[in-house]
Length: 83
Ligand SMILES: [Zn+2]
Image (tube, rainbow, N blue to C red; front, side, top):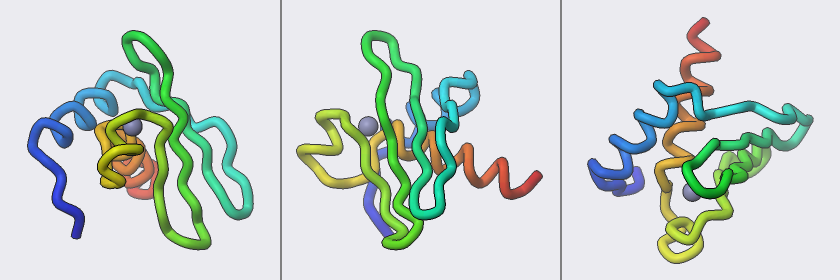
């Protein structure tokens, strides 16, 4: 279990609740998402084979742990699977 801060979680939840997550491509091996952001949109990728996530933001590049964008996409997927 990755240790993500409450701030990251709160921001991710906010992004998801406000409809900022858009699923772009659902391919065999990967799913691509766009997360709409204030300044710049973020590209989030889920690798189905490795079961791993990545994002193009600086937070992820530095910490290699779930950022708010990835958190938002995870909530999006959970919601989609539940329905
Ligand atoms: Zn990110």
